[in-house]
Length: 143
Image (tube, rainbow, N blue to C red; front, side, top):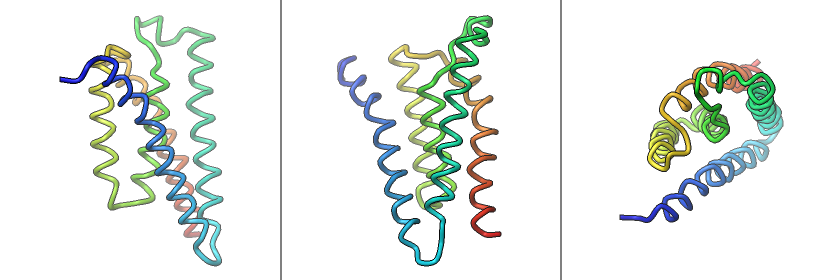
């Protein structure tokens, strides 16, 4: 069995791996001739990231999650931004990225970073907005 520190290293590596894969997808899209796919997706990706950090600021200012005995999970929110991006932009990786998110959530619970409710409530707030923003990028590309 791995030690707490080894699991911690794996957890700390998850978001950078997702970010790297996302950058690779953006670079591939930017090389498509005559398209602005990469720039459009980058813009909506940045908007998604701004949104989740705005939510963190709002939570810290108004103590929304703490008022329910919970914690806004920035780890969950940022991971979801990348997982949604990957899922929408690479159908082949959609299931793998979603499964990896569930495993990451399980690891955060196991390591006691966050509770199940922290993760679920964060996802409940973040997913609809991030999905809408990133899905909008897909429709912008095809319009």
